[in-house]
Image (spheres, rainbow, N blue to C red):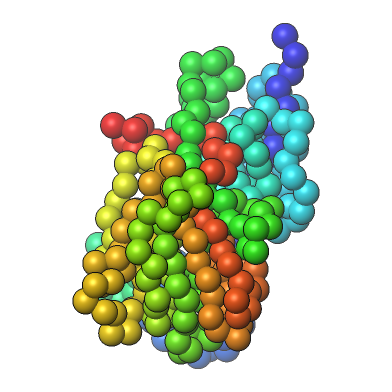
Length: 316
């Protein structure tokens, strides 16, 4: 049997030890500050230990593997049988931008939130750690998850992604979570119009908007920013998209019901941008595309799926 080829994609150690924190002078830390910095240092240690643990497991398996920090990832991921991300949802999202639908990914949450810690420090500071919504593994079950995958006992789910066309040109990056279209300055009003289209025919009224922008999410992204803004969680395997106008300015009575809705899997959302400048942000702030007055943006769920080994609770 041929050896499997794996890529281990790692979140960098971006939380510094307390004693090296740049904003703290020696001898000038309050008890609360010391507590927070100790917590941050522990997060770094837990993440580093998780990386070492996963690497130790891989050394014992009949596989070939390579480890790379996500900040060094610049080329499409090819010629591997499995991608393993160690970090949180952000690391898995970054991996997805370099993947097509031929390679599955397993997310390892390296630093899960600890309920007792949140309760203990809740009145002092935010002690939540990594959500890892899409991560099926932690250090506790990583080896069992890996064995199940290598032995063919686990099947990845197919998550819908969003394609983005600007002036009829397809962007190379697909959105796994969401897209935000807005002015680069958050205090500036965004002006745009949109409507739904099915095939070549419009299937909704044209809506003209003044707002702080437009957010469109996939099913997997529907529990993130759009839910916080008043949207709803969608079934994880849905192919539909959900959109919401951010803080609309005096919408007309006829169009107010269209400020939040669903783009069906067989529809697309056509947008025209009417500001001098603008930005399309894909899955956060790191991937973006500038736009200008008169540009058209087409969003749909026609992108290649992403194969992900999901936590069981998301599928039930």
